Length: 543
Image (tube, rainbow, N blue to C red; front, side, top):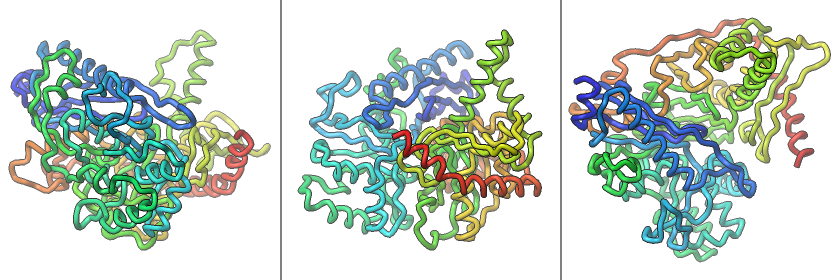
């Protein structure tokens, strides 16, 4: 079929992902190739000391993103999207979205809907849950990160927040959108594993940890048990409900889209990143590098002991994954690039932003392999892996005799994007002796060909592959999971489906680490680690 025929026959598949700075929709055909896209730019807000997106911003973003997709389809193919074969919803993982009968009514959650939001959405970026995460980690003998939903829930309890007693449903952003489109309170296992740990054998929440949590909070006398307010945990390929007519109207305010198509289990951006890079098989891994960064290594067995740098989550089909999650990645270097562009414009030089990135990133590779002693910290927000749980401060440091020039400055900022990621992965590779056969990079850091890939290879001392499709990102990844739901007649497992049907052996373009770059990054990281207390002191001073 042509793309137009695919759309008109209702065989196109839609994936929507809610990233930190952009909501993106990707429409794919029956061969899993993107045929249309739409997007909506948005930003989180710091409200009362917490990072959030309002429900109004969420649903306006949904409407605008889909409207952009619809316009692009109309312009490119001169047709309307009336029916879809399947849909997938993905979003940034973790965080806290609590609902109950006494919540706030909004345009998108009117009084007629029985459960409304009880408190502003608290995103993964918040680091105010230190006490809760520490107590739960000790209780479970398992690393419970600050951003996980269970940490937010328990911190709200410790804070004595009035709304907690009214909770009837607790979910993530992806789970929330899916619920409002289907009326189903479900969540993909990968996203669910960022709420509270899951058991890879039972493919649902860890029963012993759920029991311990219920006992911990029993003295508060809440009318709910944890298992009653969590979404049902599903694996890739399972039925997760269908688009209701009301849900269709929420997606497409023009009224063309009809309800009735199935949805795959909603997933987090980690799961869609694994899917989009063919990294769900044991001993494969991927690195996502954008506003935040994280690495995902699919494990042969569980780690030997809890470590606060390592989160244990799962693939969309339930295999254990070691995740190193960093709150900060490209935001600070993006700010520097914009500064240079502003200087050029001040001189009357008009330059395309992509060209500015390409020039600066490639020039960075001409710098010293250890950045000439220049060190950069990109901590726009707190960075738990580096021990900064109370916020961070972007900071550039150098000694008087260091080689401070543009190439070394930019190289230091590139190193900073993945420096904390290296700290966590050093634990995996050196202490846990984790083995990996292939690591694939994707995200904004890799848009300038070869540069981010080369830096990451030096940091991890491992070959890094980047695929042409990696730029499609998580929206394509969740579209693939939606396709797996409806276009898998041979009932292949997810790893085989991706390997044989979607990627057909394509592993992308690989760059191997150069020994001199590895040695240089190692020298950089030793100074970086030694000077983290300087950034911590800056945080304390500016409180």
